Image 1 (cartoon, helix red, strand yellow):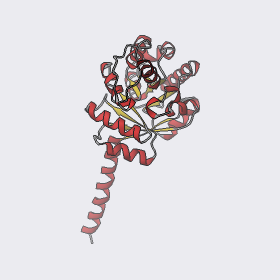
Image 2 (image 1 turned 135 degrees about the horizontal axis):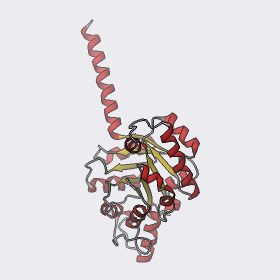
Image 3 (image 1 turned 45 degrees about the horizontal axis):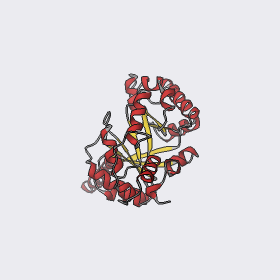
Length: 272
């Protein structure tokens, strides 16, 4: 089946998470060139996720990155700005296959997100016959709608105590495929910013993981303290979705390393 028609149940990322096989994701927040997507594919990343919540990346760039990722066999996901449901249809038209919707706190909000992701009768997404998601091919309306509705992977992101209190109802929502848990914002809301390995956070992770398991939804956890923390949560049942890097961190780390190396070299030279 061509990539454009792959269903959510056949999505390589979703299938691998359900089978508990690691998936490696690269976040894009600073880069503006599709070459960065090509580099990620060459390095072996499985997916990119474009952060529209914390960047000024234009939607045209999102569409170009999504198309490049799909052509290279990667799955392009995007995190939309908080409360901006209107952008969902536009980036789906542009080729995004996975949506990360932040600050979901209730089942009603989760249902709203799911509705924006899918055409009627499964949702309320506005019709568009020719999109990059289908290679701009004309398809019979019913076939296009059914394929597009299957193709979307929706991750709702829980980041507050209220959201976790409602996790059972949120996880039960039809159209939600993945439950996300953001530990940076969660720890901030709890007044323990950065203490993501606290007993309080771990207990909440357990609660979300258990709810996901009961409803057959993989639970993806971000904002981890590092690989050891990741391994601990996977052992608890979290999905093996690895936020391996985000471009901003990569750029800053490399810049720090390079200037440190050259400062050491020039310092050594000046003392000889």
